[in-house]
Image 1: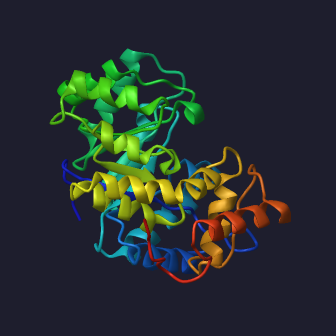
Image 2: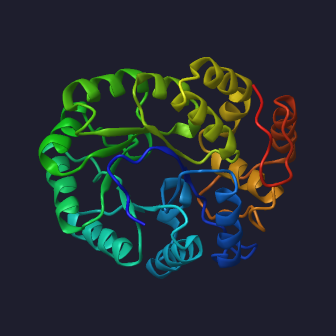
Image 3: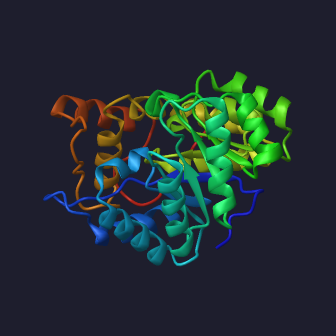
Length: 307
């Protein structure tokens, strides 16, 4: 399925399921895909930072990519993460994703690259493939800042027209990119666990790419906002913000997310590979209390979303 440059909505970042021996669990990839599609998401994003791409061998990365795309079977677009130490490696990963059926790639920046190198890097990847390239702007994890001026230039001259923007304060950067690039040249997706989703939409983002384990809530927020019901979108966001905030804790967020997906029946195990912080019984109790406090339950495929 092609990824049009007017893509919008909720693209959920998928964790990579492992079994209890820490092997890639292809069966759970299938159940996770079916679960997520049942929540109404626009598309899937795989092999991102929270997909533990950096913990996989090349063969495992290809297995995960192939399994997700095969099981999704064109029902929604699948966007694939790219992270490499150089332009050649990034192009190799992007071409492989395209050949296997990806609708787009979202590419992490090169480590500590300057503005000129970042422009050359993203332009080179975009010129090497026929599917869209999405800039993955997450300096807290990647250590590289992508300035609004570079983003705008890529939109105007570099053939790159979408960004997953995760640099707080998000509102100011979204506004600056839009002012420099214009909405036609650069479409902006938010992220950061959905913590600023309402503000991102209000500033002109077209959706979000993030991995919150109750994606039906993000879908409800987006649908209300897109329909012009801004008060309704805000009411949904405000109701569930305690859970959105709790799940997106630095260092432990992935463990929380996998636990929720396991409890909801989407994956068989909440195992994650090192390095990665595990959760303890006290944390589990806190999480379950937060889920209950916002009126949700850790069971079933799709929760009724309330205002």
